Image 1 (cartoon, rainbow, N blue to C red):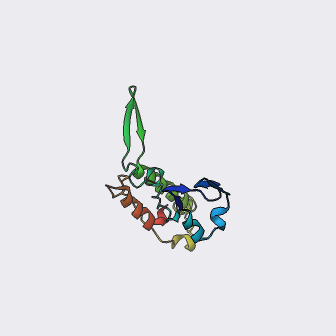
Image 2 (image 1 turned 180 degrees about the vertical axis):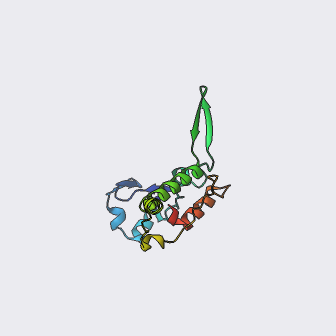
Image 3 (image 1 turned 90 degrees about the vertical axis):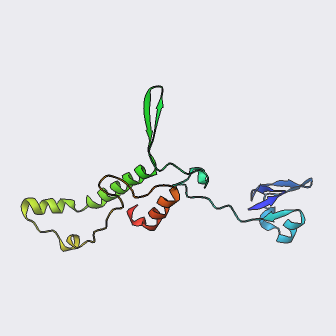
Length: 155
């Protein structure tokens, strides 16, 4: 990112510095010395927080982990938190994976037709939620983000 007098400059956009107008391609074509001569500095782009866990990529504005219940004009509204959303996503993923082969188990029980070995020997992967539909995390969204990212096979 380029800065001029502390203000960001957009690449491929014309700008004015010291009463001189510069064309849109000037930042791409100029050398570091030419930029420095008129006071342009280059700084690294700011790191954006993961939008799945933070509003607008702002590390200081985390999304709620728990559900939030609000009452507006006597009517209750529930805004689902990160935990509820990820539980629903895990269940949907598990359901779509199981739908491909769970009928084979029912067929085995009803008509005693063997389950193909390619299906019967598939590894069992535990889901990160327990029977009470909870994810074992509390506190800051970064904690659930670390878990989700480290166990990406669930999402």
